[in-house]
Length: 176
Image (tube, rainbow, N blue to C red):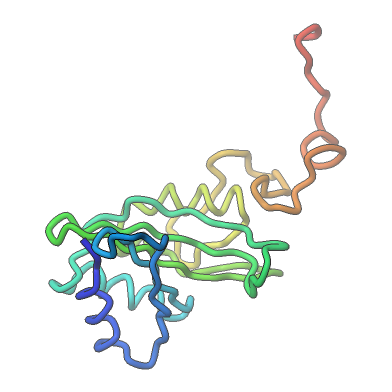
């Protein structure tokens, strides 16, 4: 089911924000389309709190939180897109929310205060993409180690020749 009522409620609640709603993927059967909206970082907590608490929206669950590095992506105007997958079990609809961040210090507000389950997901995005979550209660690396200087899922991360390979002996099957 499409979350049209939730998007309409958002437009009424925050008429000054252009959410640019669009289908995540165009489908023949419009009733099956999942919708995506864009939210500026300075309004993210306000929007997410509304989406969770307003009965017209009722997005009880944050299913996923991830990031896309749009470096060299055609027509991209922002470097990082933090993407939130929301689910309303009671209304039986989903909504995808994107919040963009840019270099040199990409950051967006933490949604841990809205959904506690965002804790480790935000830590993973911080570790692998380098997007900082302002207000996160314990933002530290979760996949690599403290002191690791790079963020491996950035598109400018070197595959060979730099990074962790500079500091550690290369282990091969024969020497292990």
